[in-house]
Each structure stands twice: as C-alpha cells, then as structure tokens.
Picture 1 (cartoon, rainbow, N blue to C red):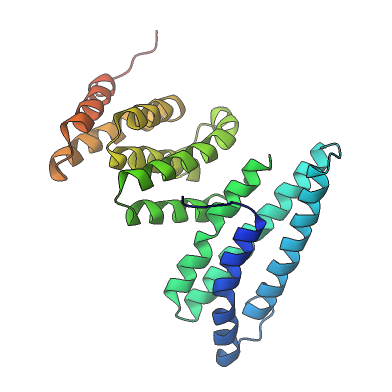
Picture 2 (cartoon, rainbow, N blue to C red; picture 1 turned 30 degrees about the horizontal axis):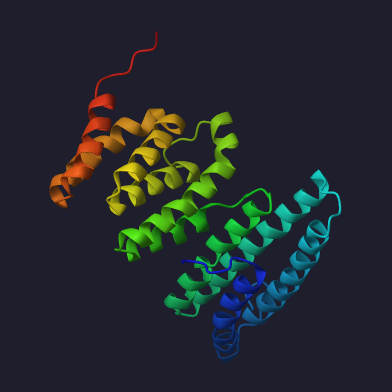
Length: 246
C-alpha cells in the first residue's frame, strides 16, 4: 500500500522524519528570516496538525457538519499544503534537493486526507508534482494501479469544478487528467486505460486528440504490449478526425 493508514498521524510522522534535518541545516546557515526559518515553519506545522486534529475530532464526534466547519477544514488543509511548499522551497535554498522533494511529496497524502474529509482542495500544483514523481518512480503494474486509484479520488473531488470551468492545457486540472491517463497506460491494464481515457475525453475534449496522437507515437517508441496498443489505437481512431457539432 502506498499509504497504509492515511491519517494525520501518518502525515505528521512523515513530516517529522524530514523536518529536523532542515531545522539543523537552517540554524547552521544562519537563516533568521521568520518567513524562511525552518524552525518557525516546523512550529507552524505542528500547531496546524493540532488544530486539524481538534476539528476532525469534532466532526467525527457526531456534531453536525456545517458548511462553515468544512470551509475551515479546507482552509487549514490548504495552509498545510502551503507550509509544505514553503518548507520544500527552503530545503532547495539550503541545497537539500532530496529533502525538498520529500517535503513536497507529503502534499499528496495531505490532499487525499482533505478530500476524504469532504474538504475542498484549493492548491493543486505541488500535489500533481508529487503524483508525477511517484508515477516516474514506479514500474510495477500493482504500484501504478494503486496510484491510479488515488488519482481517481482527486479527480472525483475536483470534477464539479472542472465541468463548470473547462481548463486550458496549462491548468493544473489538465495536467492531473493527463497524468492519470499516463499512469493508467503505464499500468498495462486495459480496463484502467479505458476508464482513464473516458474521463479525459469527458473533461478535456479539446485536448484529447493531441493526447492520443502522442500516445500512438509512444506505442512504438516504448514497445508497449499489444493489449495496450489496441486501446490507445481505438481512442486515436475515434478522436483523430475533426469532431463536428450537430
């Protein structure tokens, strides 16, 4: 499993495994700017985790869930993602590239935690970066299938906004949908590929034909199995001709 138990304890443990080294490096480098101090960011994250724990405890205790409480959860979750991004930026400035990526990678489980508690995911770019890194790192179909399932969770949470505001090619939503389709393709599982491509066609119809054209080019370049090639070719043939509105 990618995330054995995706709760605040897990997220906090991942954070605490990385933060001390950054705090130490920040002290050695003489970082005193409160906006760039690893120590200040660490304290802010710990306090935020406490606040999120209290809020979720209230929501899970049977208290009535209101739009206000869900908005508060969304705000706290988004602040957490921003803190992780700030920590990642500081780590890069301290020439600690591995820690920088690891800190940004925590945004993925935090984003999933937010949507699983019915919060709104407001900052997507670092989450997409984390998802893409995992996709590039994984080779086993079972790993890619798990990653695909997580991408489905994110897209289902964002789909109402996507339908209301058709994203352009550079929008983080577009990149997320493209990444999901790529993850499905790399899994070599036709049923996942078909699902991902249907989602892509529904939510990004203006970009689908380019994606399938590039996909056909990759079939030969990377020697994909025939079962994968057949699915990609099906969608390429469906979307390669100009689509006319009736």
